Image (cartoon, rainbow, N blue to C red):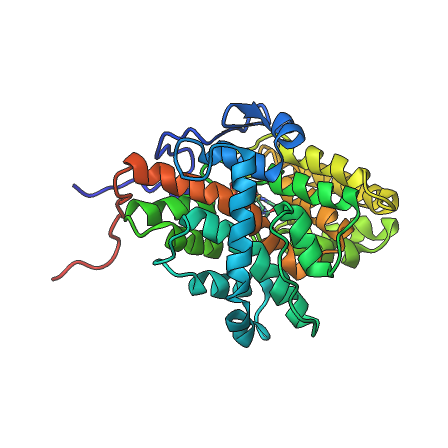
Length: 361
Ligand code: ACO
């Protein structure tokens, strides 16, 4: 029978049960595998959170130590593929470099594929970023955690402990988030039984867009363009008049403030020399919220995770074109969990469309 009502954007459509995460958009609450987000970040760290997500679904997931060791081994393995990646990475932006890198991973690899890909991504990202700056890649240190080693592979030396902890908090905060566009993409691919590497690759492509994981780079561009406090109103008026979407604001599920925003804001505040930038960003944020409430009444547009992601990654001196790729380094762990969950029981995802083209005469 023909469908007549189209639910654009699948708004409010529930397509699966999941034991991974619960996003409560009215309460501004995120629960991951039974833990409130603040507790997940303070107690588990990235590898601990990955172990929690993968527990019972994937091998090498029993505890944090196992995941730490597995990802360390995978980073060492992936470093062997770096020369092949760098042969093409010179002209690629960091997300494109990740895409090319994941494509180099072999399905015949004996290592579990979720470990393989989650270990490889930070290695590929660090090598591609250094290559762009004319620097040689740095070999991974399998004894470190992902945040520590990623910073080390990018910089050539260990970062200060507060920087390492800040990146770990970021990677933990964004590890999973319900059925967002990239996770849904990974599950559609998994539903065809294509396999983990393909699901992660497809999810990365969905993450790239500015309405999803591509937002934070442009947030720094926006703050730079505004430049000074006395330019906030002029800049925002002009952009809102032109119909520009303000990056870092609005969310399909959250109708109140995104709980991840305040966690990341506190992390930025704990880093040295961020007070001035945070104060300026806070003034811009406040004005944006006022203007959005005025001009889009009823839409309930609030700050989302990306606003303070941008400030945190900037404070860690990450290049702004690397922000989306850094997001992917974390979210890949969530994608792998969802892929495994989908493979365990889900049917092929195959919705319907409403044909509006011509009929044969
Ligand atoms: N700035 C200005 N107006 C906005 C914004 C924004 N950031 N977000 C939504 N609106 C407006 C829309 O223009 C629309 O107004 P209209 O009805 O007058 O045309 C209304 O709010 C509803 O917008 P939709 O696009 O229907 O909302 P949807 O739930 O589909 O989109 C999204 C959610 C994509 C996140 C949107 O809010 C947006 O584009 N935000 C900016 C990009 C961004 O920050 N993305 C990161 C999201 S977090 C993440 O993915 C990790």
